[in-house]
Amino acid sequence: MSEKLIIVTPPSTNGFDAESRGLNGLFIRMCYSRLFAYPANKDNDGNLIGDTTQIEGVLADSYEVSDDKMTYLINLKKGVKSYFGNELTAKDVVWGWQRAFALRDVGKWVAIIGSVVSADSIVAVNDYQVQFTLRAPNLTFLQQLTRVTPVINDSTEAKKHATDDDPWASKWLLSNPCGFGAYYLDSLDPWRQATFKANPNYFDPAIISEVQVLFESSSRKRATMLADGQAHLIPNLETHLRPFIQSELEGVTISQIASGRHAVLGMHVDHEPFNNHLIRKAVAYAVPYDRIIAEAYHGAAHRWTGPMPMGTPMSLDAQSWPYDFKLEEAQKLLAQTEYKSGFKTELFVDAADAEHVAMAEIVADALSEINIHIDIEKMESGIFWAGARYFRPFPMLIYEDLHQVPDPYYTLVHDYTTGGMGLINVGQYHNNELIEIVKSIESAGEIDVRHDLVNRAQKIIIDDCPYANLVAPDFLAAHSNKITNCYWAPDRSLAVEKITFLS
Image 1 (cartoon, rainbow, N blue to C red):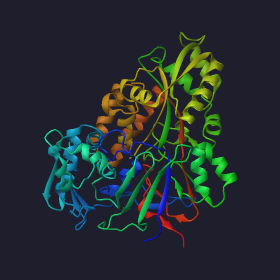
Image 2: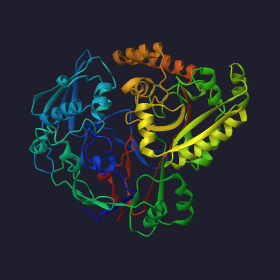
Image 3: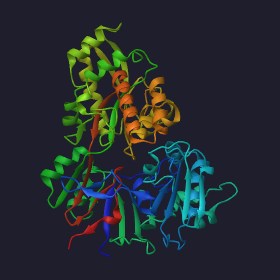
Image 4: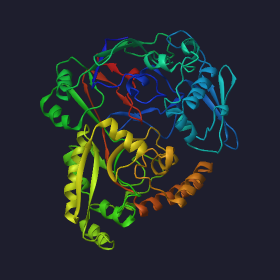
């Protein structure tokens, strides 16, 4: 074990229950483990990133799958214990999935997208084997087991805190992480700091024995703390700080990693004139994507040239994506509609997101060139998020998401399905042919069949242009040169247990 690691981040929600909204992702991933994970490989810049072509066991040792790909038997590691001293068994896994279905939140969505449609589909065969029964031979299922949700709690301990009014111990778990992770919560002073210590019972002991998380509102102060040695790591670096750190600070490394993050210019298909796909295409051709990367993200983003986020298997070649910055093409399409003289509309954006506000201003300026005049409405974060995710009243908005699973079926459901499953379908796009193809992909147990269906789905999306794909923001982090092995999983979560200090 080595010296204390100090991480500095903005103040955030301190909840530990991943089955509730408002969780703190960094905290969750320190205290809870998954069944499987993507192994770490180095990219061309030496960053540790996940190899999404394979999975390896974490709490699971191995798996077995039936010939029809409808039943999976997960073999758990033996001797894994929580900080409370209770051994991991199949009952903990089953309780976590039952809890996810009962609470009807994040974990239930994850389960259903993996074709596990009810709590009865998960059975403890014995102490160390869990059986999952799927409704379809969905090849996405194993990838869902790399997520931290549904959460695997130490159910023996959690049940001690359940009540008649709170049978799933949600109140206690919100403040008391109770998992089989590499760390446990030692102390928490909300909005000031949190301290975690290595779980002495963890099967793969963390190299660093103590992690302190400091909360600092000022982005410039966070950078200064890193330079002064008051902190070792800023896990989510604001893009505007990159030039300052690179030019002014010594002994600091910036990791810039292409990610599955994706920002869209949503257009609500039930609001005129965006119910006309020619209008949506005209908008997509009128966006100056390179300008957005340079001015809004200071170079820390990539073009997003396809219906699926970067890194998703089976994505069409970038050459298949037609929507570059072409004002003449935008004007030609607009001229084919009743809005050939242009129109006015509103663009809603999260006022607290500097990159998104900058994008909105660039988009408004560019669209004025084709007589689309935009009033930018900056909204408080909570109201904007609720509206974008659930009520969806905005004619235009800028919205960003991150896929935790790089899989085409996951993408197509998550981004292009209506209702509760289509989480980023902020414009309520609906295409019946696409929906039927997505249903077929779930049941396609063979790679070749799946590949053909995914290609067909992407071509429909390209033709319909449900929203303008703005950019794929990179993942940025800054850390002291005193530490190494900062591993970023595909969901861009930090694997703190892998970090080491250089001697």
